[in-house]
Length: 152
Image (cartoon, rainbow, N blue to C red; front, side, top):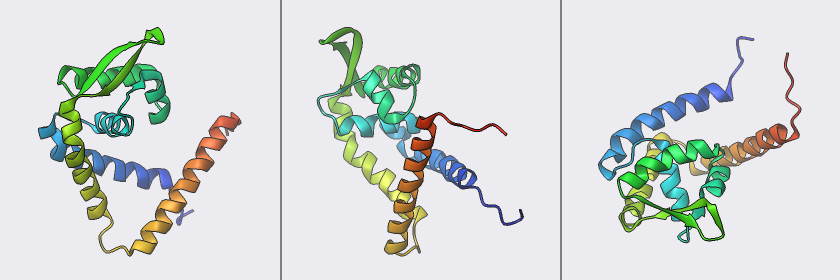
């Protein structure tokens, strides 16, 4: 088993390095942590806003986690939260003007990290990498949806 390679381990290490980079490069924009960055970038694709429930499904986290991630964004003026007119028990969240103004810079800085990590890798290999990761994501999601996790 000396040649065993764990995708999870490699992805986990890349994730940790990414956290360090994002914390250092985006703190001046009132963003602290990848969860907040994911929320801002996701909401930037939905200018009309999203329900917190829909946002949780997109980010593959529970509603309580989304609520915790949104709270500081509301407090620092990056996100606006309002009662959903179709369901008074739910909230709609959308980006503030402050956040909208920062989205191009956030995308530039996060894109820079991808460029730094992938330097010296030919574009066709990166394309293949992303294709492979998409297949793996689908396989993992399908397996977990089937609910047949084996315990051994």
